[in-house]
Length: 121
Image (cartoon, rainbow, N blue to C red):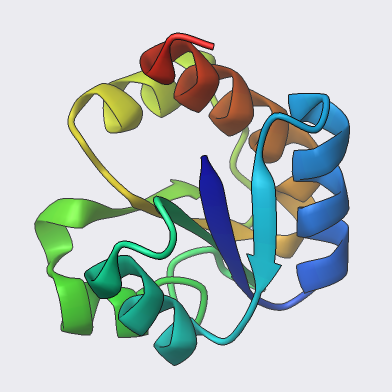
């Protein structure tokens, strides 16, 4: 599995993916527009993006380019991320996940767990 990482704090997000996936997930640090191309070409499976609000710059380009049905905001600024919501988004087939910068350390482990579970790893 390969995840494109965009938005703010890309290195923090990528490091969290590596830490919580035990090296089972490869990351590619890119821009949101670069991630769109990679998703469309099948070069990556998912996108994680972070911004201050979790629903603006982290995910807005992806919504416009690949469609709202494939995107979601997992954790907005000041919001507590819930495991059941993350699992719901993954099971609905979302492939682009936006989160607030402040939530990276809590959101990424839940996303990684749900994505690995879905893939059977």
